[in-house]
Length: 285
Image 1 (cartoon, one colour):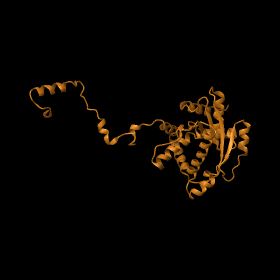
Image 2: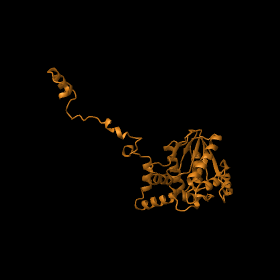
Image 3: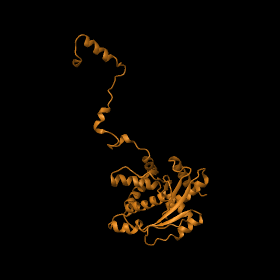
């Protein structure tokens, strides 16, 4: 086992433990897109299953979206060589994306939604309760910054998520793993990468600019990426300005009258009763 594999296994195992991602009896649908991240995720989950006392199933699903130049021959050969249970699902989302997205706009959002819909449907039809996606640490912090800068929201990709219909739980086992380590590992393992000819062909993408910004900040302070990841899980709600978290308009009602130290609270009622005894109304105090 190489140094980089040990490192990635450590962080993947830690993320799974921290968020209780996988339990005994789980049927995990591992989404293998043909990119470095999903290959790494499948390989690490397989190794962790071998080392773990937990009994769970892994099944690799690859979605062929009918992109020009798509060739999954080597991917299938790689999966077969390791004995991974798998299937390639053919769905033409490429034509839909090209038809719906105007020139100059990014394809990622619609492409992702269509892909996710087919994955959830497959998981539902085949009895998988967990869906594993290959997003890593850099994806999470880039999404956070993109949401702040371009959407005016504080949100990212949670390591564990219950789907809206509550039929599945999405897990991201690589949430603590750095992209640089995954790139090194993919080269070491010689994964048969299938390039994305859809989003990969677009220039000046927002995520690429955000990635460059974070990298530039990290040159001055290497802790910037890890601090951003920690920030996602270290939210101080009282320091934000979301009206759904605090009733700002009526916050005064939460005030507690100040009681001067050493002054007993029973003194006021005693004084009140003495004044009443001599005929002085309380309103005159």
